[in-house]
Length: 431
Image (cartoon, rainbow, N blue to C red; front, side, top):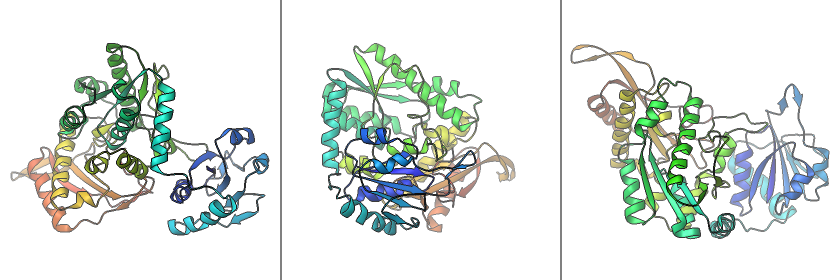
């Protein structure tokens, strides 16, 4: 493993991925990690100290501990931290190719790191680790039907087979037809032990009047756990909860030098009195690596490359306090967008696309009379690891058709807008 120490750079994840693309595993750790903590990590073969613009905390410029240089492995510095190492470069650029070139010599030549990071090895290792962690126990899986939880399901089925209990909770915030598809694929095609729970009223009642995005995410995350606890009590001997937590979830939920972007329901939304031991076999992977893992496990291509969907579902796309009619506008407009993208072949080239309906209205005209209705905002982005994203440039004719359909078919909508904001400064989701 190559350890990247976060000294305030926004390039940490790019550097980590550049190392992994060389076939060498990497992880990001805070700047104040101790020598003892580093030595306790498995097979550290090099350290990259990654400085940047966020290197001031409480008015004081931060640095790594001097003892880090005594770990006994090569150290490289980037971005002019106060480093005492043999190799140093001025700064990493925004060019991924240049970053990879900068770290390649250090990782492969100076550190002499072995190219052992690949999905075949990862899957074998995780199956072994899951079996060791779970023993003869049973695991409850939060199966949303998205890519992450689907890959977790496939991995756990290989590891523990029928001792995996999959629970799909319809919280009323699913895309159109999503729950029906989950049942068809997992229960009918993959023969998984699937429990379906319709908790629509329960979730929407809990979310009534809640405007703050973080509060919504935490309510949804906490309520999910409560539902799983109830289902676990109906089955005997379940002590483990599996989740599709991935590396960007952990990174975006905040570190000492990187402020929280947003809490994730499977990171920041868990209750303190959780009754399960967590099983998170994908927490080391970036999104593209999750897909690669799914293919290695034998999942169908269409399942592995299906649209990403956040754990809180349409709850973070119905902006502000969730209203049922506006939630339905999100669901229906999203279905139209997905239908038209598929018809145009964009479903195979655009990484993620969805609609958002904010909690304000604008003046319009409907049936020759004044209307006061919501706008629908379309978002379509491309990314590799979900840490940065660019905007898809959609043909105007396609956007015109989507707009006409939404205005004609979705109740309560009089405007359609297209979001042109990349990540950063925007995030992929609006909340």
